[in-house]
Amino acid sequence: MDLFDRQLAAIADQDLETLLGQYHEDAVVVRLDRVARGPAEIRAFFAAYLQAKPQVDEITALQRTDDVIFYNARMTVAGNRVNAFGTLVVKDGKIWRQTAAAVPAG
Image (cartoon, rainbow, N blue to C red; front, top):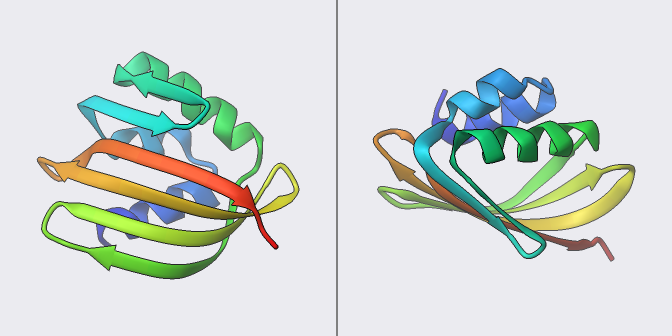
């Protein structure tokens, strides 16, 4: 199972510890409403995110290079259907930088 598949599985299982294990010690997660830097902020970020019961309904597009994963997914978050876009930049086999944005699904 590769990093992206493990990420999806950890979200589906609501497994915070597995999810956090995917992130580099110097990781940064960037969303339009928040930036989380380092282990403590990323833990708090994902603990709150998992409380919204995110569910990946469908991966609609996926592009991978040596160290970048770019995706588009239809998701349900806090009961709302959204169209999510994100980028994972990988360093040393872990997520080093992540961007994510979601808009209401139409």
